[in-house]
Image 1 (cartoon, rainbow, N blue to C red):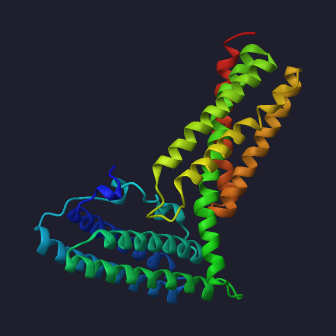
Image 2 (tube, helix red, strand yellow; image 1 turned 90 degrees about the horizontal axis):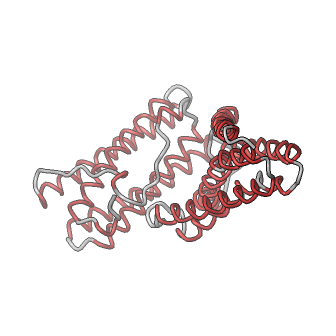
Image 3 (tube, rainbow, N blue to C red; image 1 turned 90 degrees about the vertical axis):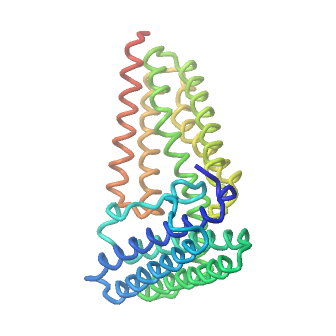
Length: 321
């Protein structure tokens, strides 16, 4: 993957073409999914899709004039800093609130992209087009917000409050949830493997602490290095890394602490109860902030946790005691 700073002007335009094409298809899917329940909103998203396709044509025309007819295939996943959006098929049935939130995130990210590209552009024609596109994305964000305020609630929500909520989810909830999930699940296997292999609570406690702290350091560095936040608005990478690392460590420490109890069976029973509470909390956070139905979130988290838990017990039981 390349960083945005490494892209050449022709690569920036090629990426912009790819983004506009992708967004046009996404808004077309939104329009189709909302047509029956929200026909007025569906019409708006279809107009947005048509506009994205028009932007794509402008970009292609400019690219061919400046660099020729061969456009390199550069996509969002080829460049550091872009958020991975949930696929449309996983969002069905489409609801206006869910669609509005994703549209806001897409347009905010794309506006950031155009504004950063504008700072680097020296060619007059390229600067003009990038500036026009950045202005268009700002209008789209405002439109997405108005859609939510008009169709979803009777009480108007102030724009500042909505922006703060979005930034809180992007900068705190997402990295914290990723860390909590990793810490709670990934440490289960080494912890319970050590427990059933040794039946020694102190040794199990040391293994659990080592696994939790090690996972926290690893996840913290991975999050901090994955995205500088310049395009996505996800905030400073250092802060996100600290949040992710801290929550990863806590996710493992919570079910490690019961092994300070000397009695093995008491400690294990409490640790298992703590694990169940952790998995429930993770499912609740996903349902509350990530627009995932609680039962689906609980099923995914619990099944994954139980598999890792069973693997740890199975491996540990082979070691004897």
